[in-house]
Image 1 (tube, rainbow, N blue to C red):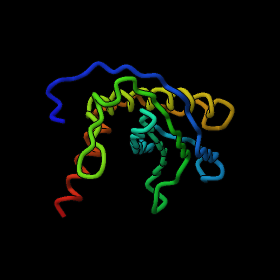
Image 2 (image 1 turned 90 degrees about the vertical axis):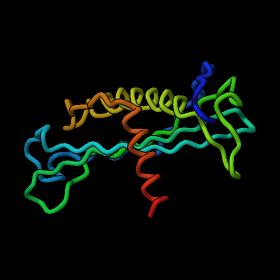
Image 3 (image 1 turned 90 degrees about the horizontal axis):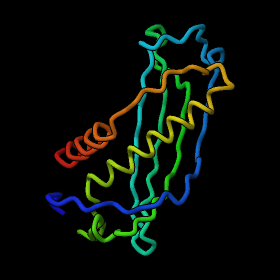
Image 4 (image 1 turned 45 degrees about the vertical axis):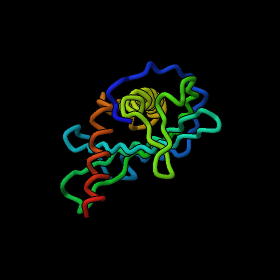
Length: 160
């Protein structure tokens, strides 16, 4: 798939499945005040095509770390993993069998990643609303940046 022609995506979000939610309070992390400048947000994702069902399953993990520059290592405030299953009407237009696996058009992954990130952001705002992480800054993140960073990391690993 050379990505020169983008096919229209016709899909439906079938379901989301919460896999992991870990919220740690400020006190358990020995933090009196959370400063935005000390927050580190790490987002990772995995995409699994299920050709027999015309489904793309996207797993997203978000971790909020806090680095007060006093302790030797950042402390995990929040970890969350959710899986999104998208049914794709025109699955064969965006997924191609290649080298014993499947290749998915990058623009399609970025669209699904954007949906997953935005939905996860809303879920986390709600989950944190009754904890001492209420008001935690949930940044707006460009899914293309996350995708491109992951692809660059994979290329670096192949080059090693």
